[in-house]
Every structure is written in C-alpha cells, then in structure tokens.
Length: 117
Image (cartoon, rainbow, N blue to C red):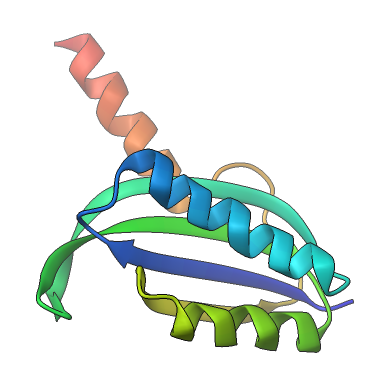
C-alpha cells in the first residue's frame, strides 16, 4: 500500500485532549477503510503565518500512514466536513523517515537549551 504523511490543523479553542481525540478519530477512519497508522505526533499549539477562519493559532498533528487511496480520500472528506479541522495536508512519500519529525527535534533542542541555562 502507498505511504502517506498528513498534517492536521484544528481550532485553537480546543483542549489538548480534544485535539488528540481528533487524531484518534481519524486514525480509526483510516483503520476502518483498510489502512494503518504507523505513527502519530501531536505538535501542540502553534502560531500560523496568516489567519484561517478567524484563528491565529491552531493545534497541529502529524500522522504517518500506510493506507489505500480510498481510505485517504475518505479521511480527507471527513476532515473537510468536521467543524474543528481547519486544514489538512496529505503528501504521498516513498518511505517514512525513522525517528521523530523535524518539528519534534526542534522541540527537543529547545528543551535542552533551557536545561543548560
């Protein structure tokens, strides 16, 4: 099956638990349609470059999946219909990179710098 990476941006007024619940919800949508979520990351609340639906910030989530295109299309369709999801980006990749994403590596570097001070 093809490999995909997805980034979901949800509304800023959600709690962390609700934002992580969206990740679980869309993971089950993929699983119900024959796909598999390889890894998920919750990146937290980040400031966006421009406003989307009157929101300046959003909860970012990253999913690595191994799913047929029909499952991905269904997940994207449900994302567009869901009121809490502002944007979704899906990219087809040849292989998933091992380890944490670049965003999580940046977070680790920042926390190490704080510990040194």
